[in-house]
Length: 75
Image (cartoon, rainbow, N blue to C red; front, side, top):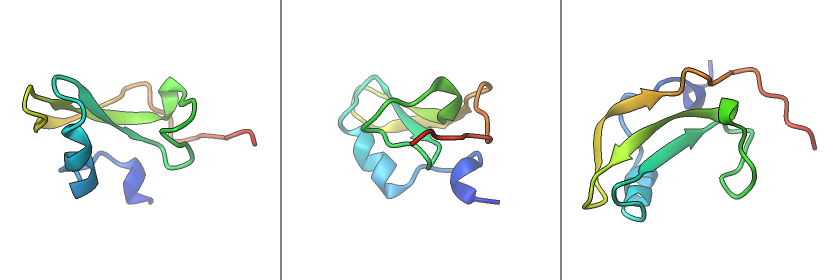
């Protein structure tokens, strides 16, 4: 099974760096068939980490209960 679509135990270094750009927000993990630069359907969002006021990821990964591993991207 592809590890990028499972619930991660900790954020990657790239996700930690991304969090610095979104204080008091979230860093989302999306299905690898989609790009953050385009439209991402809600069912393609695997989950997210909360980001505090200092741009640091806090708490555990929050899995999206609406995430569906079956994604068919129309090209």
